[in-house]
Image (cartoon, rainbow, N blue to C red):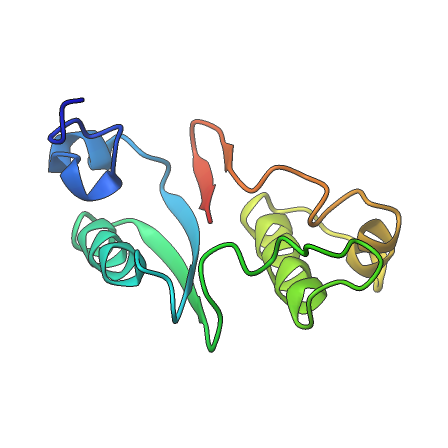
Length: 128
């Protein structure tokens, strides 16, 4: 395994590669995640490259905190953070929605833990 491979870690990516990422980037990190410092450095590098970064550090949780081991009793706070992420995605994609539409989507499984945590297109990106 080549430890300098930029696909292994975004921290290894050259600036030219990061410059090719979408203009709008939404990032979530976790306070007790062993990758927190790397995520913060990535956020700073992206901002230096002129990217529009919306960054949230979820306090008091480890890596993977949003993946509940008990599907009947979800982890506290997950729904609120998925809702915030969905609202930010709607804003980035310029979608006007009626009041309560995102909350309804969450209840119906259209947005949130049942969906993938990484979404990319040419102009916008979400990193979790």
